[in-house]
Image 1 (tube, helix red, strand yellow):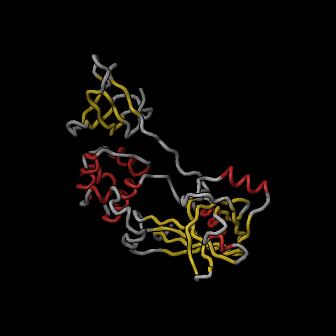
Image 2: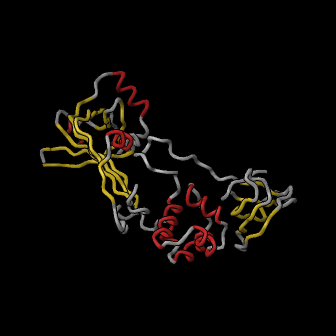
Image 3: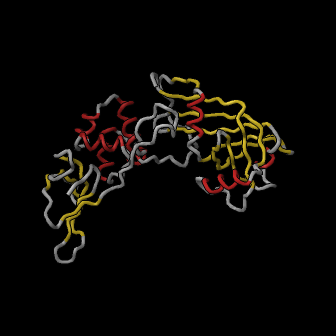
Length: 291
């Protein structure tokens, strides 16, 4: 039997095979993940040292690897979940060490390190303890304001605004997702979100011939993509300027259609690919001093 921090230990009933007790593994005693484990039981919220018997098994969480280098502008570290980043940001803001936070929350420091550095879904009891330890509430740690417009978090104490280099800009664009294209229409300027791809250094998006984004064809336009991290009050943006053209080469259309990361969120039939070949590429990043 092997486990990771955050996995669930399940004790089954010998008679029925159904779970009769379960808990979150919050402490390991061996680097290879073998027993015994410190387990926080869901029914009592108590932590005990457990040597699992034959009626026990581990239910593994999905342990994701760090984001591959180059998928975001450089100097981004592991891929922690939002809850972990909010915990780390709040204790950093208050000047509380990880060890002290773990002591206040009555949990193993290694488990807190796991929560802060990896995607995880801690139990409600764990969130309550962390919220109490940091003088906040569970809703805040869960990101209760996720439906509010981004950027309403508190600004950094000493923010550093710096320009991104060409490679960093291209890395930001390579995350795909949703960007915004600024076009001039008969009714005036418009900024429209579109699902986009990057192929051979050009921005490409699908649209319908009679749509607002289609008004970009044959004109110099601006395309912008950004990422705002309200948990850490930092972010970056990349701006592309270039002339938009309809993609007509069959092989290129096929490559775009087959390699698209997602279908257009707007739905409907959108078979016209439009590409923007950058003539100007700029970007900026807001981060804490030294990053």
